[in-house]
Picture 1: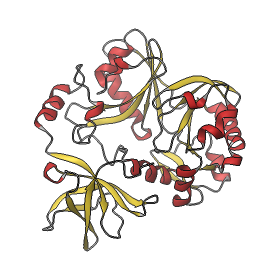
Picture 2 (picture 1 turned 90 degrees about the vertical axis):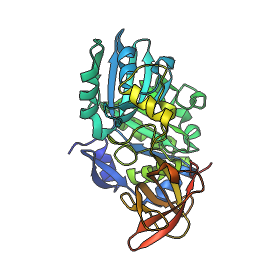
Picture 3 (picture 1 turned 45 degrees about the horizontal axis):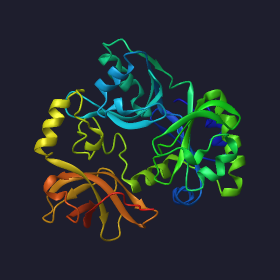
Picture 4 (picture 1 turned 180 degrees about the vertical axis):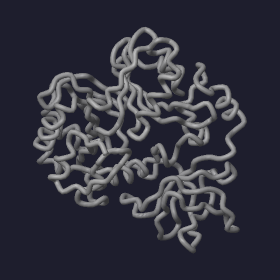
Length: 360
């Protein structure tokens, strides 16, 4: 089991630690709902240093990225980031990721912790263009400072105007007394804020100063359980639940990051699927009565026939109702469609809704 540079800090704060993607990670501190509310209303800090970081450099860096990712990275200017995915050869997804353009020929790919080795091997296998690749995952830490008060609370720590960093933009600058950290705004919670990428040796200083600066704003450490409820309220996909090697970006509702203005892995087949329409779709649903949908629960039609299963589900702390995502035949995917979630012996009525569940 790997530790992050802050594991002992989390333990000292009384975090409940659990194994996650091969790392010893804080799942919660004071409780999921309280932590969720902190991020929705004030400011919370996640240690997400388990995430992977690959540096792709050189004159052929863009060519490699264009080949392996579904989105069009040629649109990136320096200081911009892009959500994308790595399609596999069989219609599914190797991983979803964020691509940062750091310099003219330098890109940072941020990948899921559980897929670091798999992604590295996949991208390497496609690198016949001679792009330089470096895996920085073990050397870098990542903090996500999230919530409506994040910018105000953290502004004293940087000489840069944090409010000027637009969504999916970033700067390389000073923060908490450390030079040359990446400050980006690619949040996974829907409540604003930003992420700090720094070296492992720097993260404890940054963590301490962040909590000092945020003391008057109700800042708290937040665990991965609240991260999950926050992202689900926004309808953001979680790899391993809502997308995986068997789900296509088209049926997952990720057509917007699948650009057919270029050739990429399996692009012909995905283009055909988009033109013909997928046989199933990932839908968002809200329960019409009390209940909590969970990952793996069956989705059934009004006659009790299984038509799909829940990929992510929870009791939404913001809405106080059961919400979830799941794949269903396209016939059942229209907004307003009625489906049922099999919760033990009961088929609980649910309605297909438009994302996000949580509207600011």
